[in-house]
Amino acid sequence: MNVHMYCDEDDATLCAKACSGCEQAFTALFHRHYHAVHAFAFRVCLDVGGAEDITQEAFIKAARSLPTFRRQASFKWWLYRIAMNATHDWCRKKIRENQAASELASAASASESEHVANLEPVRAALASLPDEMRHAVVLIYYEGMNHAEAARILGCAETTVSWRIFRAKHKLKTLLTENEGSHE
Amino acid sequence: MKGAMNNRSLKENLKRLKVPAPDPTACERILHRSLTALRHAGNAGEAPEQTERGPIFWRWAVVVCVLGTVFLALWPDGRPVLPDDGLAAWRMTFRQMEILFPDRLNAVIEQDGDVEVDLAAESAIPSEQPVLVEFSRGPHVLRVLSYSGRRVCVNLDGRNTCFEALVTGDGKVILEGDDFLWVSQSPIPQAGYRVEAHSLNPAS
Image (tube, rainbow over all chains, first blue to last red; front, side):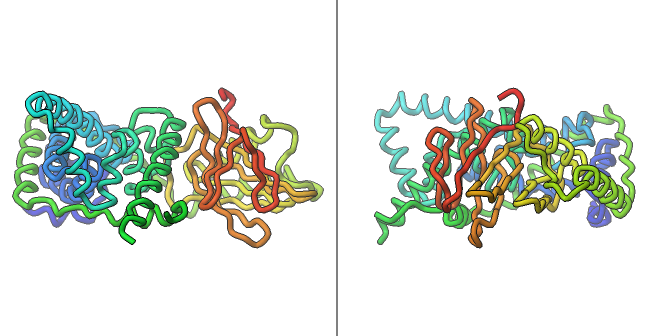
């Protein structure tokens, strides 16, 4: 499959061609955004397997929903919105699995906190944030969105994003400062 | 225990998060499954029409002409550009600037009659939470019209002061600087300047 001829075309053109069933165009879109969506998914869920699941779900849903994509929106942000929804589904699934596991093993919470403690400091700090705060941090700090854009992706009010970011920054600063202090 | 971390250090720390490289076999598998989904989706949707975009030069030329006209109309006798009669007037001013710079306006900074427009390099989804921040000391007033969550840098007595104004759910404004936090409930002066901040959203 020769996708190199599509490298110079913008997302909108590739979307239009993919909508018409052009698999090379979709493949070009896939390769253009795959690593970014994977990195986004990893930062949101902080789990290697989860990032793969979310990335897969996002691209499959995007392929299915491509005919409904409105060209006024950026394809990238549209894809991220799908990925964020896939993340919510993954998180819910994870919570259910953890609840089931904790019923089997009473030591689950202890092993969970041990797991968090063994992560690299930034990852551990992000992991300790509530999901909705971490999602906002990823969109603002890693994806470079403004609060209005993040609010669209997260499906909440801008003020909610602002507040989550404010709280998250305070918490992250405290955790990372403590971590720096403990290593000195 | 070290002092509190500032925003710059926080950003540097966040950049240290390592993202593991994706599994190459997973990439192929996901592509294959996505293409299968694309085939099943079929050609249900017609390809939307391309949006015609005029040359950037002409778009900017029109913007500059309109901007010049508005500034001349508002500034006939050397008065400061921005009106000074309440939040409604500021709201209107900001809306006019938004029309001139759709999706690119980051902030309007007015200091002692000089106006500076801070534009984003790329267009972004416009915010629905405009804010007005005033720094005043004696006759000197520096006003910032921006949006909740945008980082704005101003010069206060030769010192570059950067902050984000955050509108809370109840319409209050918090200013979060690199090394200060200002809340309307306890308005502590910054660098000797009295600070006031208001949401320009009529709903708040």
